[in-house]
Image (cartoon, rainbow, N blue to C red; front, side, top):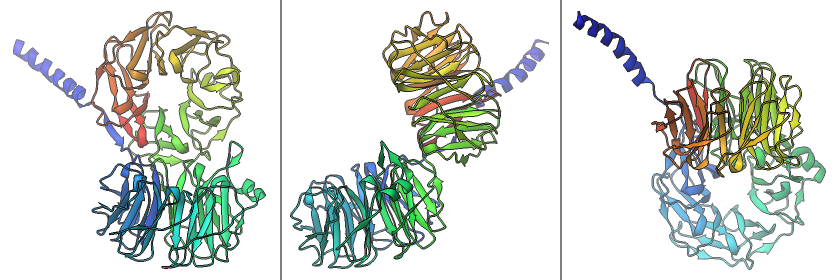
Length: 608
């Protein structure tokens, strides 16, 4: 009888233990490439390269479907590259860096050039003859494929940002001081070509000896049809109609490229892409789908074009640059929320909004029309959702996230945390404004938002908010800030946290028991409704970004360097979990069925 009872007990226990062991963190969306790209070049429709910071070089041999990292053997920033064909290429960058490959990038070798100045541009007209330009008036020439380089006299100390040669004799230099130089003898002598533009010049392209274009700061976009003797730019009126403005000034442009004398593209800050079909007489802005800085653009045919930028941005067009898609979205994800066990949303940098309807197996990109960084997302109900972000971003949806519109927030600053106690009552917190830290409150489901005043001694950015009930909420922020209301925000009271670190997230299990996490491994706990806060040992000095509890006993925290902590005793002790990644994690949420999701740097998503 005893043996029979033991057998029954084991038959019950073993599946339970197996289920407990089976539950672990799984990466359901791999992190992308954390590269700030500076340059891009395709030599044909299949073979392309992109380069950027920390010695990054990536290559595609299948038309951009897949990109593979190539070893540059350097951590120096690579600024520009140039390929003659699929095998022979050069790259230049920080501290006089010159790299060369003769096998399509399988191996890159350093070529000494005799300078420690930053090199910004490289151009070859054949496998032997090329030029490199850089800081402090540096211009070098090689006639033996880079085995030896000799300096050319420029006569100035300008930072030469771009060098272009049409043939072995005719070429141009542009500089960060807004100067244009022209040579007709292979660079032995240079003549200044006046532009009458007080701006930096960052990019240049000549399609023949007569027709060329230059882009730069303050939305500069110049064109010449006489070899640079005269230059014509966009009028201020056209800039206002075409370009985004930041701080009252037009955003700078970084790159320009033409496939023929009529059709051209220019890219720059805030994800701007300009398209012309009349040789640059007029330009029209097209939607890029990103708010990140774009640094290079290239046509590879009249229909196909590519662009790259910061934060791993790679864009592709198949209709001549009028519409763009992103085959890879590597933007950081900052927040996550699930409305059901299968349907969830993530937000991130460069207005990235991801949506899943199959519990994280697949994620689709949704376009909200914004270009700014998203910081928070919360659905008050399956149909009503809210997104916060930089530049006063407060987006609302009333159709389950299918469409979003901007709501007036009256804050005028960046908005971060958002939470709702029910379908109608919620809070948004953000940066310091003229009245102090930003707190917005709604009691009608977001139709109207009222500004609430923090305590007078709170003058720091607020990051996280937890709406415990329609009357009670908690907010945390910089410099150890914790504030509390129990009258729907009519009054906010500062709590004594006892720490000075930035606090990132707050979660209350009930109206007495709550937890706050922050930088340097800070975990604070209260069991008396915030009257006192006690620091708990986290076992890490990594920054902790987000905390949730499934029930009164079981809780989770995520943080930088792939940190995930777990408690099974109500937060008294915390232990480290294997996350399977060293990528920074920024937010964690609980789906209605109990599944956990965490998101972070370079678009990583984990499921538990």
